[in-house]
Image 1 (cartoon, rainbow over the protein chains, first blue to last red):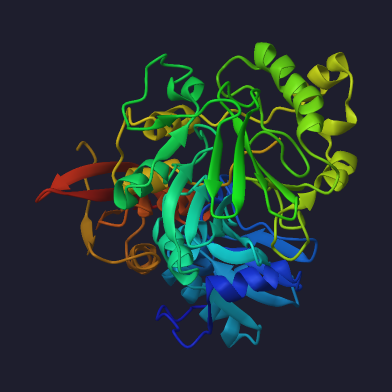
Image 2 (cartoon, rainbow over the protein chains, first blue to last red):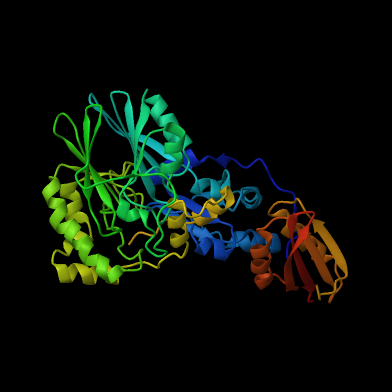
Length: 391
Length: 83
């Protein structure tokens, strides 16, 4: 056994979330060494593309016997060490650096990575802009639409500064806040953003009843109706009821003056999969409803050129492969796993056989989103630990 | 608090990895069979000490408890040197 120096090395280079995210998007060969305990690792770690490798080796193995632990780090790639905060990853990175490894540590650790937002424009046209506000570690995506100084926010996440900044940068004011449905996997920023801006917050009334508790929402909202239209500068936004994932799930179809169309699908249709219909505890009765939405309602409202812009991704290769998570419907129709099952029976079997585990905290998150329970910051981030579960 | 102990290590305020690093060091100075009581404020120490004790040489985790001290949660770990 070797005795080790217990002082923490601090001259190891830190990696910011921005740089780290870009290296993941560019599919650089990176080896992530997650030094948290195995339970934390099991609940979710870093995910990337094909060239990312991830290894779990708790920091206390390095405390116990540094040489034995280092011998298990097989990679000759650039190593990024991550942990629960950042001190343990600095400690391990220091040990590796001393032994000649090319190593850095992720600044802020996993909580900071989980709360990292990436904001990038998807479209900049004379009639307006579409800005994507994504939280990549969770797979959550939201959008800001801008036209003639007015902004609509679709499915805002709970860290509101990113929307304020994006809208200010576009010289616009928020005039409309839309949730495609009552979210179960993350806390909506909609009601809080409405309180802050005086813009109305819209939700379909079917989703304003908690499906498990059968209790009505306690927060202020405006009730959406199927077919309801909004004018945002030069853009028309049409509400299209799209039940299945939830009973009050809607899509927002945006039509520009050049007749190009953009469908914000929330959790109705993802680029490669579908919004699970079991989170109300009624998977078997809601799946046929999802079938109707996907195969009967959807084709009537769009064409193959319509952009599909969902509120979740399951991996970073989706969309254009460079962090812009949308695709034309023609491509989604060909590539989406669920859309290959066109008959009712086939679809129902496929969906019910491909449901991931039901995360228990989803029931509580929906309570938060309906104003039935108000968490403090610690509880809010605890509820949002890990990645959103997409089939 | 049924567990008796021979030494106490106060790592209140220390952040991960220091509670565990200092505990490892302190365990090396214990006589075989002696028990170290570690008092930490880092909540992550609870799961980390469990994981560590599974693989560590000569360390047995006897008990863990959460104790309120001046309105703050402290996490107390009892570790026995086994060899």
